[in-house]
Length: 134
Image 1 (cartoon, rainbow, N blue to C red):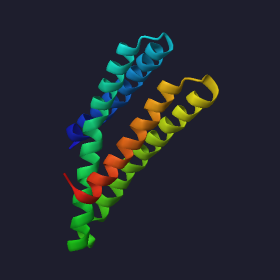
Image 2 (cartoon, rainbow, N blue to C red):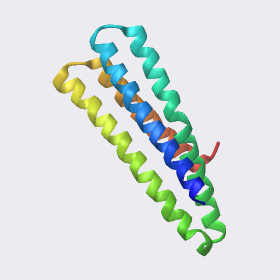
Image 3 (tube, helix red, strand yellow):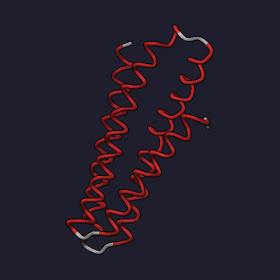
Image 4 (cartoon, rainbow, N blue to C red):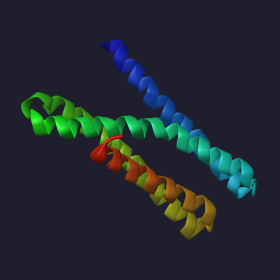
């Protein structure tokens, strides 16, 4: 059981760290006007975050529809899933807020718009997958 927790922790650590490094590359590329590198780093950023959003969304979908069938058996799983959804939602909201601050104070419209676009698409994708499934 410990190995499962360690694998999950490693996966979360890799996604968060790779996302942070790609975000730094995105920022640097757009501020130095290297748009090809910026778009490439943005696409890699989206690919890195696609799998966690798919996993959390499909898990939410399964839990939502299993709870409708059998209520008491999934209380612990529901709490664990809520614990994974809240940080993801917070990260997406913080990333969108960073995009707003980029546009307003740094006057980096492309960079800020891409951040807000990613947060919006990822959040909408998470909700859609959770409600409709894959």
